[in-house]
Length: 436
Image 1 (cartoon, rainbow, N blue to C red):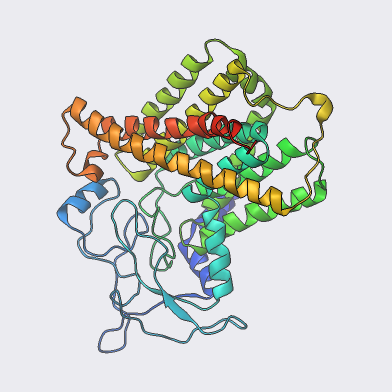
Image 2 (tube, rainbow, N blue to C red):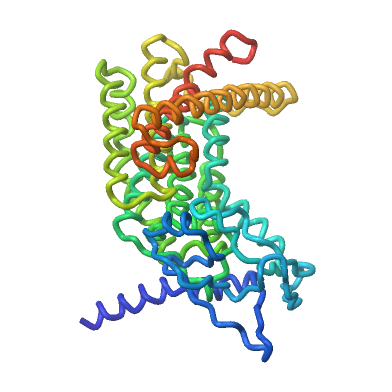
């Protein structure tokens, strides 16, 4: 009984938003204070998902019914937007403190958040980079670059791992439905994912799964220092995890659980990758299984909670994974992009040269142009078509996509096509140009 009470006390401590706030304070992040006539900080009301919102319109407030409404707009201890009270808070060696805004608007409500002071700009930029290692822009650049310029075999398997880790993490969030760290006392350095649930941290999950899966997949396949590979994977993981606390998006408990959850998934999934990959490449029924499985998983995830950005993110991840898996099967059937023979392993890292860097950059830029064109075309076709078929008004695209019937096929079809072209169409174009 005493042990269980101590465990509960430890869990409460690790989930305490004041622990996050203390870490932010150590790193030089300060909330700008809003003072009334007597110099006292105005009382503010914390949103039950840890948000700090401006007053919202009726339509936006209705969208946020999953996290509850607000009678007043909490200020997170801040001055109104555009006004800053500089306290001169600095961290040794960091230079002068500056007042900045959260990185991006909240993707669900459009709220931009409140200003805050940064006392250590090195840590601010370091952790901004760290949190970007778990954002969409990183995924849509890292995976294609790895596939077109380094190792398609490793890349397609890494995408399998990423899809399962992110899917299970997003679904688990909607099962637990834990709120983000309360603000105040936490300063919301980032607002983009603030409307989503908190437990576990999917940034911590992907920040653990991707570098360590990449390390285990390439160890023995490529010639490099194992020690260096492990250190880089550990630093990658540590940077992403700590950045989520710095950003005020997760409690320490969220991050720890995310890391452990990801490790458990890797322990189960990595030994099964050979069998899964063989099935995807060779089984005649693989395309049917791929499409039906990913679509079923998307439908299931949409039943866990009301509409939010995480629903669309889950469908996008599943669609991308399905597209890459289908392209892998087609490539194998057509004899395109064959894997290196076993006797050629381990592969040697090529010497850096101007020609090598130029060819890699050209492949990447050309491939990105194809993917951007694919996304734009499929987005224009899919949303209007789905809205017309389902008789849903399509004038306001953002509002139309709050319907599961629109969001799921839109994300699935658009990003399924993008994923397919990443591994099939773009390399096929390269084969007709001197870029292979």
